[in-house]
Image (cartoon, rainbow, N blue to C red):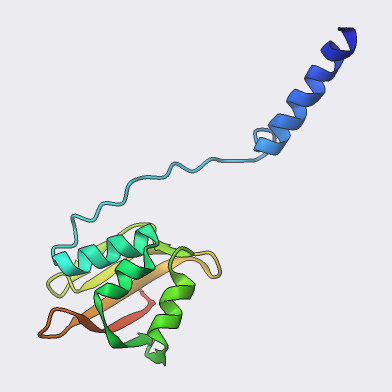
Length: 139
């Protein structure tokens, strides 16, 4: 039993070290995203799908030939969607313009870090998005 008592502090120290409780470690509080600023229900639903990482639902809001402009440069929309969803997300939605079609906010990318961005949606007569403009925002 004495051997067990002497190993308990060592195991506790290892557990705390692995959990990040020792040293300079901060736990972030994850808040529920507030989508109420987005008054356009189609944009709101698309952004919610993006945030959830639901590629199938996200793509269902767009035409099969959606045009993606990334800081003005043409990119493959489906490839971008499949690579970014689940690895990129809005941290905050700071402002909404153009009747809810333009979304600005702080954004996190596992690859590029945190930055301000915009998503500008373009809707066709059939109710599908045919173009999406994204890029770094300055506001």
